[in-house]
Image (cartoon, rainbow over all chains, first blue to last red; front, side, top):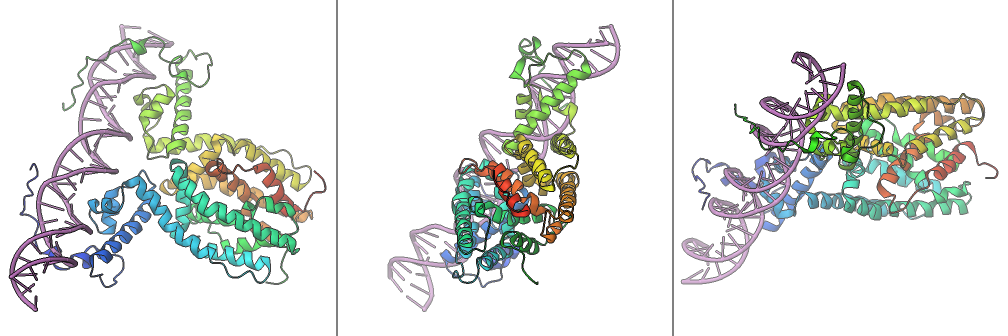
Length: 233
Length: 233
DNA sequence: TGACTATGACTGACCAGTCAGTCATAATTG
DNA sequence: CAATTATGACTGACTGGTCAGTCATAGTCA
């Protein structure tokens, strides 16, 4: 009873009309879902989107939930209907954003053509999908916050890094077997294969304004190093 | 007058005795300097050391100046005798730590021997000096905080990255001229040369406990890729 | 002793998380 | 089908705690 909501003040007109969607300049002008569940899902998505943006821009500690709420067009309390607290929100966020990317990248084309083409297609896809994208910043964010969020680092290692490394190693071994790759030791360090892609992601995110980097072209040069130079362009 | 420091309270006994050095288990047990300037320099160094540790462990926003002060064996107010505020302390910190590393790495051995040996010596030095060191974590910290500290990102680009890239490019061009490197395009992306080293630094800092990485060996394999495989070990 | 340096209690701003209350929608009833 | 009741998603003012930065006081050196 300490409350006493002054009950006046709020002009009871604004939110009464079309509260849900029109308000807050919500992200997509999709026709508002009419049932509760759909509305809730919509809001959750808005929160995830907003939180991602804020966390990327400010890092975990400096991000204010008030800002996330404002950006999502939602009250702060609503966030707590969807997430336990700031920390677990961050951890869930990483999963939510990364899982679909992994799925997309895992759905590889069938292993036809040369190993080089395979690798190039994959890496090119990765660059298109990640570098110069919100996802690229997420990678930087994980590098940044990883040590303070072992759960995040573990998840990322398990779901992305170890899988990626294993996949690259298989590809390298195939390349060696087929005689496309001559450096046998490369199979011991598949990291070398993806290093330029990672560098590209970080570079864009830190130094793009000083010196933009043509990641696709750099990738091609790097692959020339591994598979031997290609004849013409 | 809103203040009013109660003025009593503090038992004036603890810190009065051997305050300066013995306290706080300070880093090095060097004999305490006797003159003021030296003492001040010592304290400043202790603050820098402590701040570096804390910023690396927690990131900028989550680091408390109280913790830095405690770790440095100094009162919080003392920090403000040496640095304007938290932000500029962070920026200065980066400079203070990086400058000597750059200087050390810039003092290259005279350009004798093969380009490969030159590159290998340099990179090996870099790994020894940076990876598995506090410095390596600093690199991660810069990647993490760079976007929120344009001054830091700029400084790092200017002092480290652009110089490094230029140096590597010169080395690559020398290698091409001497016939040691066949991939001419490599000169367009010196990043490729250092990518594995960077990856190694980040890897150690994030995934060492999952899967430690032999950076030196990876480097060697990578150089084999660029310069051609070496005969025996 | 006087000038300089260090201290740490204190302040005010800020922010994660809470919860009493609201209201659109869904369910039930006549 | 309209009226009534129940539900629970949503809100945002509020609390308790934290922390950067200050400054009156105490200590130290030359």
